[in-house]
Image 1: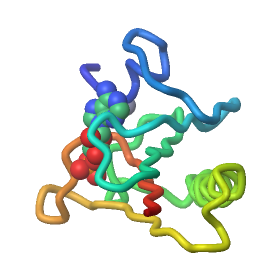
Image 2: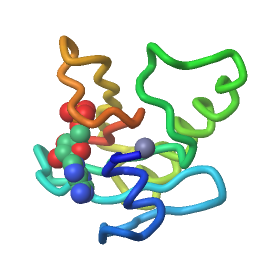
Image 3: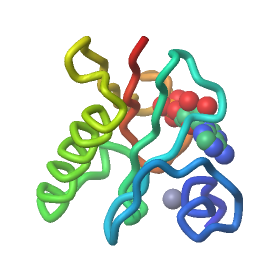
Amino acid sequence: MDCIFCKIIKKEIPAEVVFEDKAIIAFKDIKPIASVHIVIIPKKHINSVVNLKKEDEVLMGKLIMTAKKIADDLKVSEKGYKLLIRVGRGGGQEVDHIHLHLLAC
Ligand code: AMP
Ligand code: ZN
């Protein structure tokens, strides 16, 4: 499958990884739109929120809990930040591997 985020997971292309465990990896966005811009993804390839199944409920919860941990680690929790998921082309999604943006000024 020609998925750029799956290639990052498999270390076939480089990324500045800030967090990784069995289920999730997070890395710095290559074209940041804020001073802190992290992309957090499940290692399971899921195209979009549209394709989520009931079985993905726990994984998506873990994605948000990981964002919280990274925000704490990067010390942006007190000031505040945005969590963003784009859905489909109409929602501005460009990479078809579900991901959460963590954005902080
Ligand atoms: P979206 O528009 O929500 O699909 O966001 C995709 C994001 O992935 C964009 O912010 C891109 O800058 C980012 N991106 C694409 N390729 C890479 C890459 N190789 N490494 C890091 N971030 C990337
Ligand atoms: Zn993928």
